[in-house]
Amino acid sequence: MLPIKKAYGYITRVKEGIIQVLVFRHSVMEAGIQIPKGTVKPKESTYQAVIREMKEETGLKDFNVEKLLAEDIWENDEGVVQNRFFYKIHVFKTLDEWDYAPTGGGDEEGLIFHYFWISSKDEEELIRGHGDYLHLIFN
Image 1 (cartoon, rainbow, N blue to C red):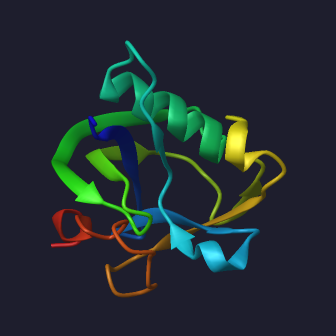
Image 2 (image 1 turned 180 degrees about the vertical axis):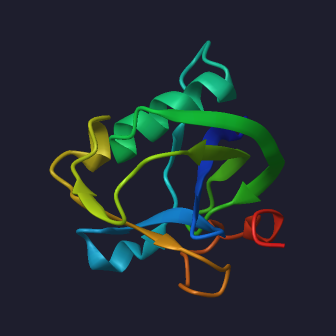
Image 3 (image 1 turned 30 degrees about the vertical axis):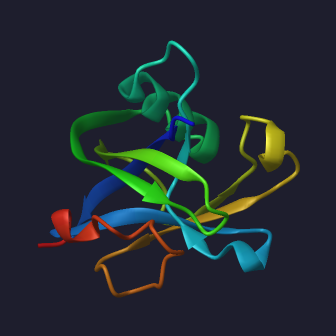
């Protein structure tokens, strides 16, 4: 069975000279703190997927995908193998925190995500796998 392709976004901003990364807390508390991500659709590139997923999950529209930071093969807690693509994305103007109901449908229907910014890889404990490449942002 082929791995499921997933596009992850490390959305960054610079505030008062400090680089920050956007994270969110689910309305389902057991889901932990995450970065926005989603499944790549058939015939969609990972670049196209990360743009779509960032819009659907965060509500942000004005951002720049800077580069692909990392690609790996990873097994999640349920034993599903994923081919993960982590992108660095920069946003210029945004709020310090906000709530957003993702628009992608599916398992996210009815959820609310609370977005906020972190300024170091150790500031918040992200769920397993989400912080794997934060060292490439916060170096």
